Image 1 (cartoon, rainbow, N blue to C red):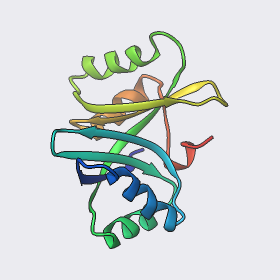
Image 2 (tube, helix red, strand yellow):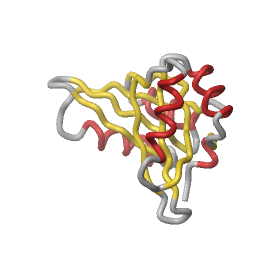
Image 3 (cartoon, helix red, strand yellow):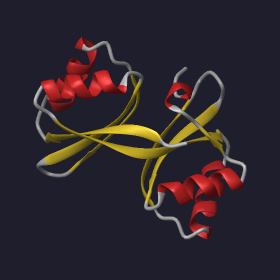
Length: 142
């Protein structure tokens, strides 16, 4: 199952991420996962949220450049080698990971890894066939 991620393109300046969180706060949207990547002048804020359509509307209404993309949310144990096993399965199937970010849940003791691969459908099939647990947007919460 693929998950929708929101990417917001922002100028690399003080307050840019705060402007995003402000728009989401006003719309009552909860951020479930976030990744921020930057260059000297611009950045990309990637988000998994609880109310995707509300988030898209709020961000666009605040004149932000926003796109959606499909990502894979993978549950792994919080143990040495758990992520390596998943990455090995993808690599052995000739699937490239374009980017990734993750977090550990203090409640269930597991980790969630968000993956953007060059072939998302192939990645889903590979990870499912190897017995990995894939998550939905509703699964990504404490």
